[in-house]
Length: 201
Figure 1 (cartoon, rainbow, N blue to C red):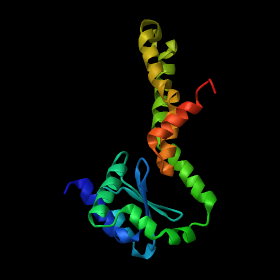
Figure 2 (cartoon, rainbow, N blue to C red):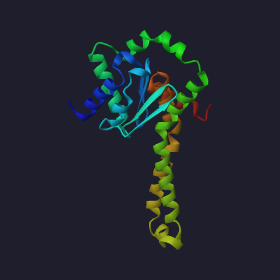
Figure 3 (cartoon, one colour):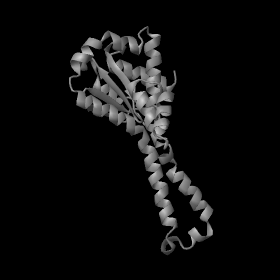
Figure 4 (cartoon, rainbow, N blue to C red):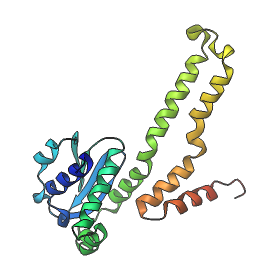
């Protein structure tokens, strides 16, 4: 068993097994789990797992910090193990639908959480864009780096393309993430975002 699968298995045991799962999802860095019975969670064990760098409880959601890119891999591995055990995540959610409806009576909180999940995956792209733009501005300062901008205009132009690329496709990224969060087709989400941004409309 590889490290990702082992971590997924350990997390499942730490949260009380697949039968205790109400909702299982991830963001860029965290495995996010909502459970039926908090008393079945072994929080100290979860915090001590190799590969888990932190634990946060936000509302009814338990969040395990596992690192950028790793969260999606761990959640995928958890879903595979749940399915192999004969209980699919969709089945678990359907089985506890009535409990979930009774449990979540704060629509504003749920709406804000979904909105946050739409934009969190885009944040690294904005950070990279800002860093590149900052470097460009420094390279344009003759009092700091001399005549770099004069001698290498093509380089600065290329960096400018990299720095502004996220804004060219930002609507597509938001459309894809929105569809993912709300359970729709990610491809159609991107297409709809592209259609809505057309100047002809």
